[in-house]
Length: 569
Image (tube, rainbow, N blue to C red; front, top):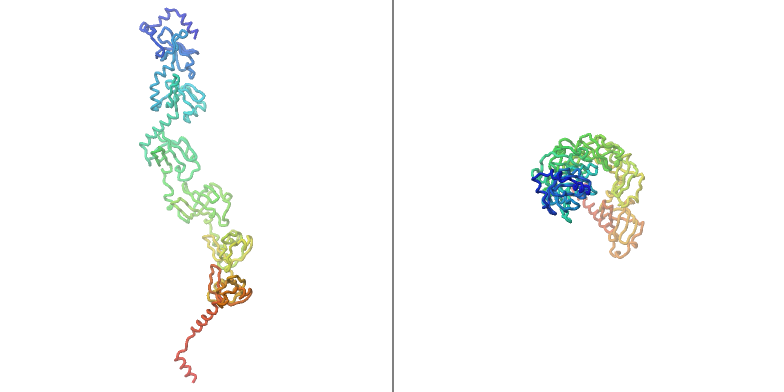
């Protein structure tokens, strides 16, 4: 700077005056003051700053410190006309100027309005700083990385930073601090404002049901974001195709131009949902016309679970083969070992539920039902032996032949006993004899019985039947007896005492275990395995039976008596 000042002092007076036009001489009058905005011409650009001819006898100088965020050689050229503010006069033989203050004074009102109105403005990138970039919006402003869109930030992270690149922003902060203007701008806020404007415009002319063209912008695991006229809309994975997709990338790619149907517009949130599959017929609409229950079809395995196999009959139409419908021989086969994804198989259609969009299929029913052969092999009433495979609270499962089990329900084990705990009476692996009551092939069920190997004792012991029985046990209020050694019965105390004077006596004083007595059956309940008898009513029943017997004898008629007498004569 000192060298430049000396240079100015050594200039020959005549040479200096020759450069000035007569009409410009008035400018060299010293009528400027600190704070004035002056228009000047750049004389020289050096490493120390910029020398400016401001029409004064003394040149102006802008210190390099004012341009810490920019390359002045790129921003300014010799002979360029610029506006500056006078900061100091006659400092080391120069006037100290400020380009920044002149710009701030000139643009402050305009930029403040832009800040208040959130008006989008353009700026160009000057330089990079630790937490963002400096951009020129007329004056220097800071654009932090946190206020950049993801796309713009990625450009800087991938070192695609281009000095001079134009960026659109909105002023987010506008502060006057210690005489300097501090401005923070946001590219992110600008994009949000533009998107909101575009969304409002779109919402004004679009409606549900419209078919529009959009561009796939982003793919996620739950769908795709499709841009329509600059507005982001959601295409959910369930609305891409009528059949199930694992990922939208199976059909869509970023940048694809696709037609979609507007499904829902939320006016309050501004969210728009679109669909792709809705442009095509729903294959379930004609499902019952296309497929018939009982027919055999070809399909492709889409998924194998622990409860069954999902089979695709056509795109958008799939059914379930439940694990119980896979094989006749095993109830719970290992599906992962038997089948593989994309395998083509034959299935029989069992049921269509259009409202629930469910189809039931069977693999095993494609072939003949082996339970039909089992029914022929084990006819109803046949007696067989089998091994107990499972003991459940409700009955015993017995292996009839490899792959086929029958059930003996607990009610079909005994005529005369109620068995509460089957595991106390039977063991897995134990061989038992049974009789076949029924085999139902369509239900894959075999109904077996142990008790039907014997006659039903309740058919023999009906009410009013007189029978012999033996006292098995004497309790306080009843006798436990066995009837002909077959079934048990009970005689309550009031039915065991025949003489009223014995009512106060203990039953043990009147009867003894092992004693044979005669009694009449007064109640017989097969479902409860219960027979009640009475000694007290025995005499009345005998009398009743005798009366019935003799009352049924036909009385002789007078004609018959006379006829008999005549014959005897």
